[in-house]
Amino acid sequence: MIPSAGRRWLLLAVVSAGLLLITLDNSILYAALPTLVEELGANGSEGLWIINAYPVVMAGLLLGSGTLGDRVGHRRMFLIGLAVFGVASLAAAFSPTPETLIAARAFLAVGAAAMMPATLALIRITFEDERERNVAIAIWGTLAIVGSALGPIISGLLLQSFWWGSVFLINVPVVIAALVATRVLAPPNDADPTKRWDLPSSLLALVALVGLVVAIKETAKTEPAPLLIAAAALAAVIGGWAFARRQSHLPYPLLDFSIFRNRAFLAGVLAAGFSMFAIAGVQLITTQRFQLVEGFTPLRAGFLVAAVAVGALPTALAGGASLHRVGLLPIVAGGLALSAVGSVLILLNFDTSMGLLITGLLVTGAGLGAAMSVASSAIIGNVPARRAGMASSVEEVSYEFGSLIAVALLGSLLAAVYTSTVDLPAGVPDSARDSLDSTLALAGNGPTLITAASNAFDGAYFTVMIVVTAVIAVGAVTTGLLLRHHGPGSALSAPTHH
Image 1 (spheres, rainbow, N blue to C red):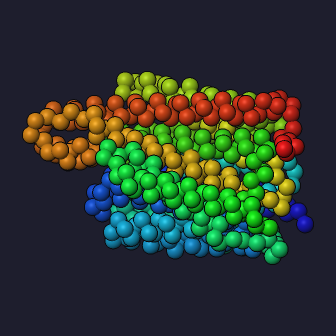
Image 2 (cartoon, rainbow, N blue to C red):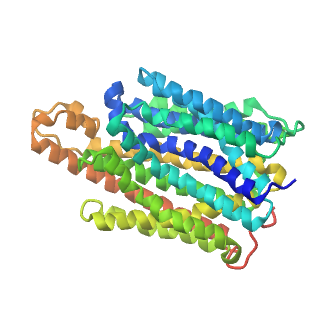
């Protein structure tokens, strides 16, 4: 039985609230990180792991959770994920040490990984009309951007009046409301016991991802440990190889690699990853730069990067509504190309003109909003309904992988360029090179030190923005080539290319 229109859109609001929580917790620590590091006494590496533990564990578990959702039912997975997320939020809020907070963030990721594919799969099941589903998915995709943008603002607001644990505590009432609403609104549980879920495959994917992230973070350090890099890279290669090999022998693989032969599906996956890389990268480095160099409060820095979401909202909704007429090519590849133009504006004006910087953030957001809104439709529209869980998982992995690589690569690159270029005045201890936070802690050494540190940080910011711009441009060209047959008037779904 098809749910009534009112129930369909109310359910969309509930699953979107779940997605909002998941994406908020990715970005809510960007603005809170300086406060958190100071109050918990975390070092630079622990600070990055406090952010990264969440997307690493989530990305590793996502493939398995989508297929598990196909087996036990997406409604049940969503409810289980919400409950775990609520308990983990309480644990994170009251963590006494950096290590316990990292563990709580990993536990939070288990709940998020259970929830996230279920949100998109429930939309796929509930909205049977393609045009209506495109609009629903566009709203869902927009909330991923809104969540990323709201994170720094909400943490800034909370930190003005409360302790840092409040940034996690805010999840609990939303979880309780969503649990009640899901039981009332969601369609009956759609379990399919014939589907098999393979725990070893999930663990192999997790090993490969953790290895890759550790290798990237360590390589970007000014004094990398070659043995650790080799061990992490080996874990990534062996884990990835063993995962792929295992899938080819399983009757019900977590990931059927043949779905990537569909060019529209592949382009959607790449667009999601490139977009989240750009959003996470720009937000992470911009909130840090304006707090540490310009003296912005966390709230003011959060409002500044919210310009990305403001730019994304109208284009995301317009993209979903016009997809059936315009086709995938102009919206996905054109959106990424527009965001590359915006990021050029950011890198040329971040230290000279606030007006042009905000314009750059708005333009970047407008391009990414368009691309992300229809990337989901390209992914879900090019697999059969029985593969909805697997397809949703692949998309979520690309989202998480994009933001994960952005934080690991760009966060480490920012620190490495700063450390290697800062020109410390005579008599300043070498420990001041570690990060701009470390330098500012020694600000008693006078304005010369602060000026040298700020100049070095701006140089590092400029370098990282060049990398972001280049990556978005590569994304625009790649998706453009994949979608060259998906121009105006073309169908959303395409036959699988063998």
